[in-house]
Length: 98
Image 1 (spheres, rainbow, N blue to C red):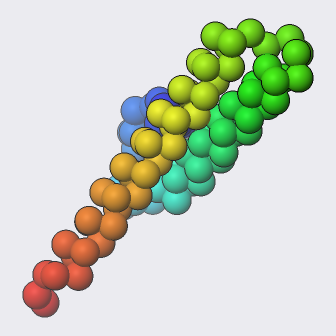
Image 2 (cartoon, rainbow, N blue to C red):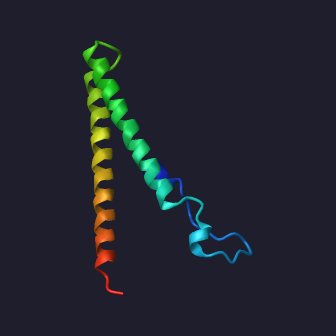
């Protein structure tokens, strides 16, 4: 999740470009959200696999399974908070008078 945000890097206009700020960005907000959801899903799958390996007597230790589950939990909580903020922003925009 944070890797996707950090991967954006600084925003700067190409030399001699008169493009609008929205066109300067190569990564859209939708792309960032898609990456965040995919990362959250991957974290959940990793946690599930760690628990299955723990129950099956596989290579995973208890602490590795717990770490994977906590990473998945934090990732899901972050995604829910982003969703809540997006809904709040949408509702605020809809309350604006034109």
